[in-house]
Length: 341
Image 1 (cartoon, rainbow, N blue to C red):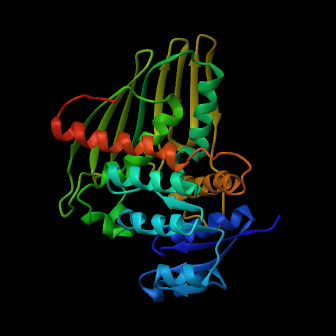
Image 2 (image 1 turned 45 degrees about the horizontal axis):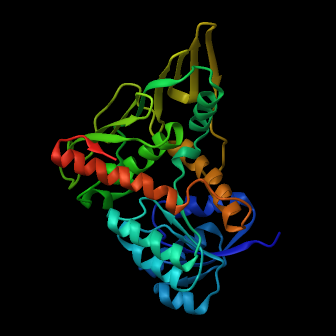
Image 3 (image 1 turned 180 degrees about the vertical axis):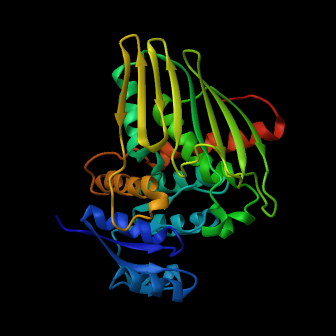
């Protein structure tokens, strides 16, 4: 099958792993890199062994190249401009999360691509982590019956600002950065919430936004899902950055997603443990192993969508529902109220 040719916009921290993930699919070719600092794009091309054209200006790239799709790995504040450029040229686009810095902007981008009939996908990889997929499989099997309460937790003392210092300056940080992942996982596992309540806090000094958040979701059939997120910068017990833990109670038992990718299923028949580690890739940073591995699975799903083989899970239309939860969480925290959805 002929490889799809793409241009990558943004050559910061995540871009080299994004490129490595595409290479694992074996069906794409990066033909151009674009970054506002040309030298950084050139360095990425060199370190990744790419024979790709280098650009500083997105418009110049699109005038000279003919990519089959764009991969946007820039900050959320630039997503709107780049997605609109793609839509105006009828080029399918893959965009990093969060889709946009405001809900209105996200809604606008989805509407523009829909009107232009331009495929628009969000690289929401967290739900593609191996242990989270296994948890979904266990829930779908009915092993623990109907869930009535769940807890999803991603809290770590990892110095996230060391690798991504720009995050320090975001007036809204944790819910946009990690909440877009964890709230999407909640939707993936349990469906669409009916209401949301959120509290936020800033624990570390020297940052602009919140670094701790607790979100409670109420779903049909009396199901409550508590989402705990945080980068407090302090040592924490059972810190396995960037692993996500979960505990789900059902009317026939429970399932616990534990450290190091173990899942413990408890029912009247006893206790059963399953191991669901991520696949290993030589380019993955050991500190981010489970996240980097999920990039490949997410890419493969999106690639099938780009080829018209199926509808990927993380279309922009689907991700807009996650974005709605993120911004309703901010509204709830500001008003200190439950928000009906």
